[in-house]
Image (cartoon, rainbow, N blue to C red):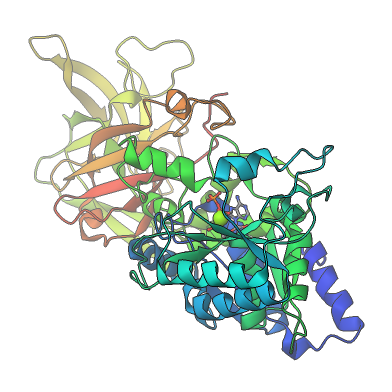
Length: 550
Ligand code: ATP
Ligand code: MG
């Protein structure tokens, strides 16, 4: 791959260093909210932060932004950690915003003392109605000039759980005429009686995102706090909050923004992904059709392919939609290098070679992986009865069909040339078997005139004597439309045919595959052995070529 120059975030960091910022003081963080599983959009932020850590030799924290107890759960914390480790990244400290609740509360008391915050006792509707618009000033709350003793008293009562949710909120006192709507006295605390997955019911108030995020960065001494572009207008507030608790000791963190990853035919919003899980459209967050890290893993994606995808997409400030075929290209490229080749016959049709001696035992040689000649060869049994894919035979061949048909020849991969002679059908008229003749002198690699004889097509096969039954899950895109989630009705955009289950006959070699082992099935694509221990089952990761029909 072509080496890229520094991305704009790296340029910012390099600029800071050249102006005297100590490299040893660099620190980054990845801050997921544990309200769902990580998705392909998070991958971009993970790779950005951890790659910066690697490049500059700086620590990267994993921070759970756990301030919405109603939506968060330990299950998500565990899944997030598992996914990051699987990608091959190691965080420095495992942090939780909830560990800072006490400090944040104490700082909030300071804010009230400094007359930088007040208790508003209006309903949330009233507060919203007073906000104004970007071109029209907001209206100050009647509680804006409430004396600070009263605010302190109510805030402490909220902290003790004396007030119900919605009775009071704590707001920063900034500017009700600011052109930045977020600066119009944002709410920083609300009362909530909820069970938090870590702090239980010990807290009756919860801090809002903006108040929590920058101060958590400061507590952890994160130097560069990187987030997606929609947070650009939050930067002013981020800085205001840091100023409000000044003087600061040590590093003053700074927020910088990069563009989100948007992927065609895919959604990258936890809210929408949660809907697919809740509605039973998919079989959980880690369903192989889901654009979650765990879904992609079950689909057969590798950490290397996901990281190379993130690197290729790069980091910029421009919003765009990346074509999902780039993601598929990355996994195809990596598996082409890594995956052993095997033969699996989907929807099998029996072939008997009538002039082949029943008692003959022979095997043919296969490259385990032609990309890695050092891995050597594997022997595969050849026999009188074999299976080929039903698709590779046509009784009345359509124009341009060059595979097996009556009277025509085809080469069996790495074996012999066969010619179809008789078709055997059952009572319903379905073809159950095709009798063929083989050309004894045509064996691949024997270097005779016959073995070099060209025929129009080569097809794969498995020996019926040793073939093993397997189930193959073939996935298609989860959405029919290029930009799902834009309309109101996400569920109507779901592709109803995103999973097709096929039975197959596969080489016995595949029966010993372990969970997560990758293979290239000849002529078909890349497949991964799934977690199902009971039956032999494979998930299709991606086809050999871009087979997407526009
Ligand atoms: P969602 O909208 O799916 O809930 P989020 O931004 O609320 O996403 P968080 O768990 O808060 O999810 O995100 C953690 C980090 O991942 C944040 O820094 C966020 O900016 C980043 N992130 C989330 N989605 C994307 C995306 N599509 N592209 C790049 N970064 C993303
Ligand atoms: Mg979020």
